[in-house]
Length: 369
Ligand SMILES: Cc1ncc(COP(=O)(O)O)c(C=O)c1O
Image (cartoon, rainbow, N blue to C red; front, side, top):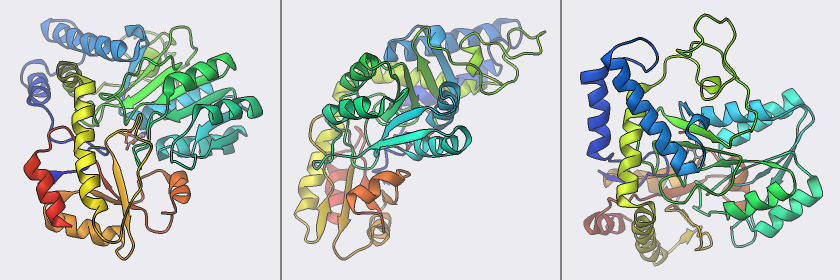
């Protein structure tokens, strides 16, 4: 099987990720802060080490990293914690449903005003357009994805955060498509991501990394392993955002994944995967009827979407599947972007290679279509 669906979930995972998770099941089996003894200490050490690695990745202090079940939970918690009734929110047409749907729900509940930045003609999101939208709409919060999961187009997150800060606007960066590939230390007030995409961790784990001093009150209440005699959920971080038994085996796996990514170097992993995208784009552009939805080359991530003049994405997906190639077809949980791309009727075929793809894999993909 050839996996061209890393934008959904990376595969295969590094052996060290499996070994770390297995270690939890074989030797640890408990949560940190839920008892005394050697095994709780082992759990505590690993969880602290993973928290420290996420903190270093995002440029925040370790106590400002909270683990969640993924980017979706992280975004829901953060948006609910930050938004007040009547707020104006600036966001972009690139957003994943994990931003779009909480915002639309909160618009109803809290009478938000949503302003959505459309893509430019080249498919990118220029900082000047963002700055103009800040000046026109004066939002209290801006939430934007670091790169589109449909076209791979990235934005200049450091410049976006800088402009927003100067306009007094809080920023939330969805780094789900860039964590493990690009520098996340861009000055966002909050960074969220999932661990199972380019970070190469397991599913079921993600994080919120918030700058010190930003108020983020609890949105879920429950056991935390601390302040156990109190009937109120603690407001201190990270416990404020971590209610209930944590997914400790996934935290072990994420820790090993972060170490693996640093060892390989995110820049090298990105360059390798983009070389695969270029090879696929060159080969597929030569096929009659194929239209590639290419983003600007700078800051893109390894995602390639295409449509065909005569075939529906689902028909092409069936051809790929028959050849043992895993791609994604149709709509990609980014409802606002398909209209701008002219793909609102059928969606696209999305090929998203990871760094492990071989020359033989590439040849097999090109031979299949
Ligand atoms: C840009 C972006 N944000 C958020 C998410 C949500 O991630 P998860 O489903 O792991 O919570 C995804 C997943 O595809 C994504 O691509």
